[in-house]
Image (cartoon, rainbow, N blue to C red; front, side, top):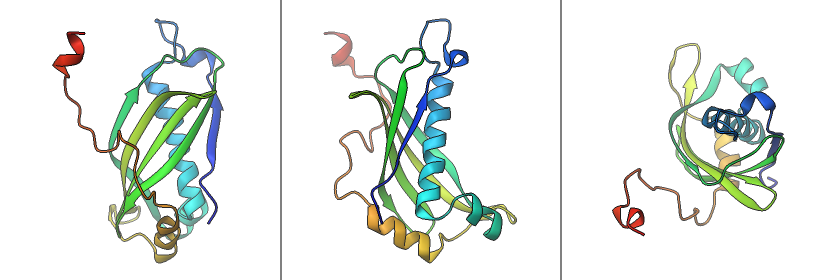
Length: 155
């Protein structure tokens, strides 16, 4: 399987908030579009979802907002699969403007039978595709918790 596609999208005027930069809600929107691109690539996208009533629901996410993003910036989101088991996918997105990392998102998605509305096993063909693209070593930010770093505030 080829390396993951990079998802690209430009910042729209309605995404700019009262502070003059991209509002946090739209980081989530763009990351959501990148997640959809991952699902398409590994074989559990739109067609599969409609045919087999299986989808991936996000059950946990952690976003880091690292730099401001301005109007009409071209966003590039690279996606990496960190791990998976027979029902869950652990993956992360890195959003860049040019070569500058502006945000990251780490997620856990769970496979769901959309008819029964319950957790389901990821199909074997999708598991095989995921196994081919799992990172040997995740980025350093993966697995971080949210907390106050009191040392950083005193600098």
